[in-house]
Length: 229
Image (tube, rainbow, N blue to C red; front, top):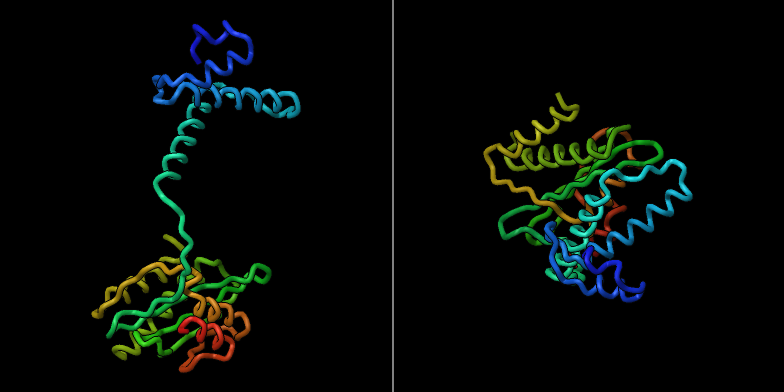
C-alpha cells in the first residue's frame, strides 16, 4: 500500500485510492492486489485470534500475503490460456498390425483384497485374450503392478512362446518391456479403459490366483459391446 496516501482519506476514499493503484511493487505484484490480499489476511487472522485459542500469528505475514497474490495471478493467467472443452473419452484401437493391451488394478476398501485385469484386442477391436488375477490383501499400487506384469507376460507368451517392496515386480516389467519385441506404454483414462476396469473388479469374485479368458466373460460383455460400438 502507498504509505503517502493510505491514511489521508475517509474510509471509502481510502479503499478506492488503493484499489485503483496500478503500481507494480518490488515483489512484482500489482499494489491493488497486494492491498486486497493484506485486507483479507488481516481479517482472517483477527478472527482466528479471537476465536481460536491455538492460533499463532505468522512471523512473516508479508511473505504469506505475497505468495497468495502470486498464486492468484498464476491462476488467472492459466485460466486465460486454456479453455476447457468437454470431450468424451473412449477406447481407441491400435494401428493396423498392432495389438493393444489394457490393464487395470482394483482394491476392495473393506477387505483390502487386490485384483487386476487385462484385455488384449487387435486393430479391428476383436478380443484376443483376457486375464483376471486375485492376489489377496495388498495395496492398490501392487494391484496395478501385478496387472502390468501379468498382462505383459501373457502378451509375450502369446507372441513368442518364450530396497523397494515392489522392486522385483518392477524389474520383471522392465525386462518384459525390453525384450525383443515392439512395445510401447501409454496412460489411458479410466473412461477409455472401462473393459479392463470391469475385468479388474471381476477378480474380487474369483479365487486367489491367475485366470485367463479366451473369450469375454459374461460379466464384461455389455461393457465390451458398448466400448466397440
